[in-house]
Image 1 (cartoon, rainbow, N blue to C red):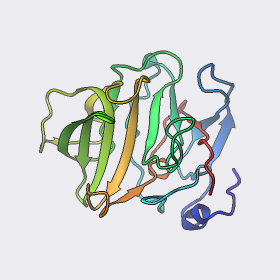
Image 2 (image 1 turned 30 degrees about the horizontal axis):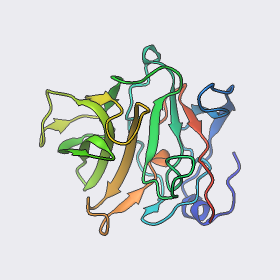
Image 3 (image 1 turned 45 degrees about the horizontal axis):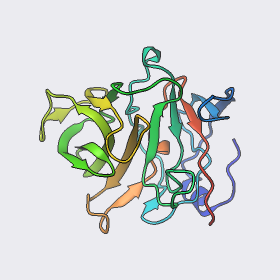
Length: 218
C-alpha cells in the first residue's frame, strides 16, 4: 500500500514497515472496502487529522477490542480517526468505529485491549454507556456505546488483554450497534491529553474489514 506524502505520513514513516492487504467484495451496508489479511506492522491510509487527534508512532500492538469470532458476524472497522463520524459531520472524530457489517452486533463481546484496570464507568448522552480502562503507564482506553458492562468487573478491578469487559450496543447518540474506541495518553482531560489513532496500535484479526475514511478538507 502506498502512503501519500502528508504530515501524518511523515510522523509515521519511521514505524511503517508495510502491510499485506487484499481486496474484499462490496458490502451491502458499507460499500467497497479493503480486506485486512495481515496488519502485523501496518499503517493504513489516514484521514486528515485535526487537533487534539494526532497520529503517533506504532508501539506494542493491542488486542483487538471486539471479539472477532465469525459466529457473531463479520466485522468492519471504520478508519475515521480525525475524520467524520457521520457523512456530513465535523472532521473531529477522536476514535474509530467497529461493528458488524450486515447483521446486528448488539451483545457482541468487547475485550480488554491491554493488561490494566477498570478505571471508570460512565454514561454520556452522546457516548452512551462507557467503560474506560487504564494501563500501567497512564494510557486510557475508552469503550463507548456499550449495551452492558461485564457485571463481574467494577472500577479498580484488574483486567487482562482479551478478557470480556462488556457487550456492544447502541446507547447514546447512535442507531448502529458498534464500539466507538479511543486511546487517550496521560489524562482524561481534553486540554491535557494526547488522543491518538487506534488503527496503528491494533492487531487486526483475520477477516476484519478496514474501511477507508470519509475525506476531510485539509
